Length: 360
Image (cartoon, rainbow, N blue to C red; front, side):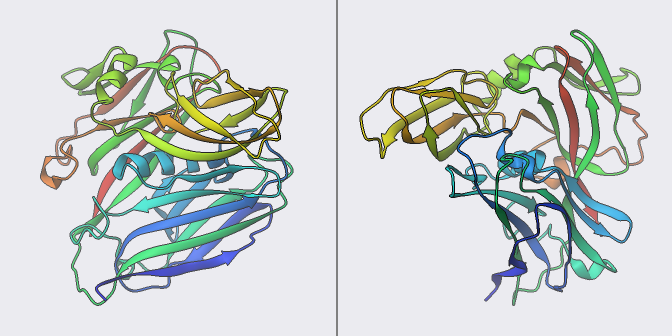
């Protein structure tokens, strides 16, 4: 076969919290890696989104970091790279399994022959996954971590490099109408910039409302979005919506669930399942990925969530995504890149992730 999948880590319980270090002990070029983390739930409600269970993912070679993100940004980047992919199995039911998937895409698409991670170029590549089974459910009983690599097998390729996520900056946003100035590196080609603007129960554009990238102290403005809500509305015609199926228990008292979609009008459509009586379900609130549910009668509810902005994350493409020669290339120019981000209020967590091209 030209292509195959291989287990980098067979499914195992890695205890309630810690960091699992996994050697990349294959020699074939890797197109992508899929990390699966599954818990057995002890309750029917969320205290945080599914992706909170993976606070850090790193691909390293010794002390050198080659790829880095947290679970939220790994899923967000995965969605923007390949919309429609699996992010989670949204089964929030006591004694049932809830599962999240965290992709590392090394190419523009699966089986990209020009861009892939080649372990032979490094001395000791390792995957480091920090996990916490209690982050979304304090009564979870066990977990299962599994890692799969998508390999080029009998097909011989000579990739020129690979795409690397780099969690560049994390911070607590200032008060309303304040700005954060973030200096960006200028030593690699940049394919896209992701900006995360998280505050529980608020839409992403209600947390951070402006974004501007400039060179040489406003000598050249690469982009300037003075109202990110307008930018979001325009990009709804570019970004395919996120759609995920869920199985939830609902009760006569208010209970909360979290979904990846974080625009204001997240759409939740559902039907009763295993109810002893037919009951209406009220959805309120439903913004910022925080979903409150109250039912006339307790029971299971099968639902579908529809929306945009995965885990409060904006994407800013830096050129045509499929054309390597069109990506933003600051090499040799010393452009003094600055990203200015405007805040809409307190208690907002900001993060900047770059997807860069690492050449061999």
